[in-house]
Length: 307
Image (tube, rainbow, N blue to C red; front, side):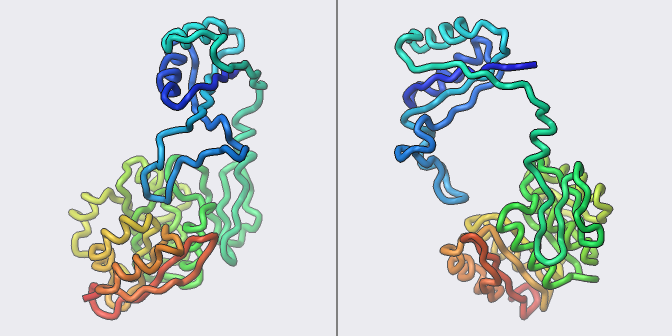
């Protein structure tokens, strides 16, 4: 089956209305892009990680609607623009053919095995492991964060590889896909637990753990609090963002056993001192490593619970 893209440029204040109107007129899907992308006039929309967007769109927006190749494209354009009180002659628009492709194969080709640290490979299910003797995680890109491609995930995985938690208990807080918990389990950690606020992430992490033959218990925060209220761990890893990490300092520090390790990432290098200061009353942290502007912080709890 083949498709056609209907591309219409409008000002920011009309983009959302036009998107809705195109769907009503018969488009299969709609996306909005910066009409000036790739030029000196390109407008960044998002601020720092964990912050709200600096603006809700682009002053010159390109609305791209996908339609069947044999649909009445002129009618879709006319009907959609009429909802804005416009005609086709008043706006810049064009049709673009979308070539028929093996979309599954095309998508899979964009995800190759990832080599991390000394001996870790993250391998999509449609690839063979480059080194079967390595620590291999079979993991497909999905809805939950964590495939090993992001610097913060790599930093945490490299810390675990450098400090093998064999025979130690590990908590992965903000587990996403469960990748850090699985690395810990494959390095001999037990028991291993993961926590995330997103039920979909818990479902994804549990599926990934079973696929990789890892015995890991995953929880939503309320379940974790009720089931593991007094449990502390030899290693606690949290790859989130600086703002929630600072807010959770007492809780996360309180989950670390006496002499245990706390590892934090999702922190930009310029935010490191703020996070270190937030944890100072509980655990002394320092920058363990930096990658592409992101850092991993690590420290040991000298007294039980950091108190």
